[in-house]
Amino acid sequence: MKFIQLSDLHLVPNGKSLYGSDPAYKLQRAIESINKHQSDADFVVITGDLSDKGELSTYYDLKKMLNYITIPYYLIIGNHDNRGAFLEVFDNKFKCDTFVQFSQAKDDSLFLFLDTKIGDWHNGGFCKYRLEWLDKKLKAHKNSSVYLFMHHPPFTIYHKQMDSIGFEPKNKFWEIIEQYRNVKHIFFGHVHLPICGIYNETGYSSTRGTNHQIALLPKDDDTFFNSNEQSTYSIAHVTPHQVNCIIHEYLNEENAYSCSVPLKKEYES
Image (tube, rainbow, N blue to C red; front, side):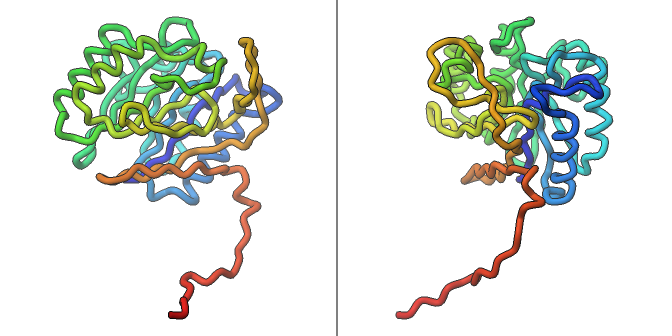
């Protein structure tokens, strides 16, 4: 199984820029790269903050751009999104009740796409309904390998500013995960940083946003700083024994060059 993770598009109304950059242009470049170099992937998933301020027009623009992707795509929302505007534009395959959450079973694996948006807050979390939904899905597929996609990371990432707008309630979420112990990996967005690790024996990873990044600065206050680090997407390969994620700086593809390197070195005995 191979798939692509994009995150944090932060689209703005057509013709506008965000932090001196054009979010639509950077997404278009990502789509071109995926179509050209990753067309063998099973799907693309975008892990939230599709829009910067949730304008209806940005979701129509997104849908037009995604029509050019040659492989299936899945979408979830983040704290910057407007759930109502999103659901007005995209069809019900991304919807369960009033939330943007759904599941896809492939082979012996289950992929769960979660809605972590809470009101108009930048913090994320689950209500009672979403916790129950997650519990039912994991219980019904307790013999499957499960992979979660969500916007907010459900643990501390040791970035003071991002942790201040993190996910709650962590304890109730992990009580469900640990009950079944079939969640192999969590893919998340929100942080605009390439992060990987293990929490309670569950692997996790993220990728940078397509438009702008969050700087990793040792500040003690609540000030957020953006950076000009390269836009990326993640190329994930999932097998029964491994999850491998390659962080790809797709805007640098034109700078790639060939070199002559032996494919196999013969060693003298």
